[in-house]
Length: 244
Image (cartoon, rainbow, N blue to C red; front, side):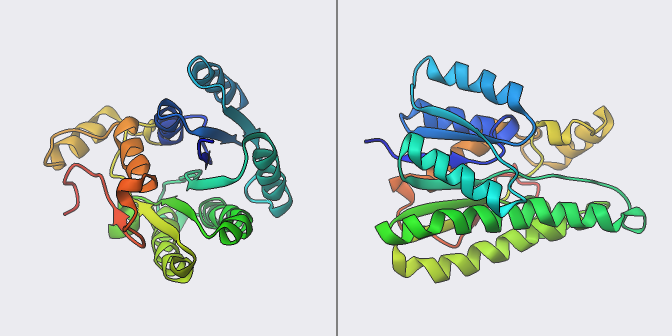
């Protein structure tokens, strides 16, 4: 039976691109969404044309109860989860001096606590089977920090540290944990960028453009594949050379 992958935040952007990549390769794919039901169901219809094992599932990953219910539903529908892609996240850019406590908390609750809850929920079965793969989505700003992105940078930096710690803890159980830290990618999260900002970022990038979601999905798929069997605790940053 094909392996099952759960991708959080899979209704759009990098998550949707990753779902397409895994589905194309014959994996059983669980598409998590929170509020994006319409795009998640549309993606499900698209992918089921060639792969019947696509399961959309709604959950609030800020809640342990909701997260555990999601994991149970996926296991019942698709079998044991072999691969977890912690992709769901939020960004609330703005001057640090104007950032509210509520915005700071929301950033860490979704980006960090959500990853914590999803990871903790899949681990009992992975530990029992002594196998598994977890991929966390950070950002290039989690490596370098970004002006007017203090909370986002801090939360994404935390995911890098979490990845390295978990790789050490779970390695003896044959569970690999890696991190993808994309540069600027053409997604809804970056839709607020002005044309001038996008042009400037492309010009700052040695490859002369911003990234595409499918390119990040390829990196995620590689880390989940047998080709990466000896890779754990690493941060891969597909950023076009923006940060070297």
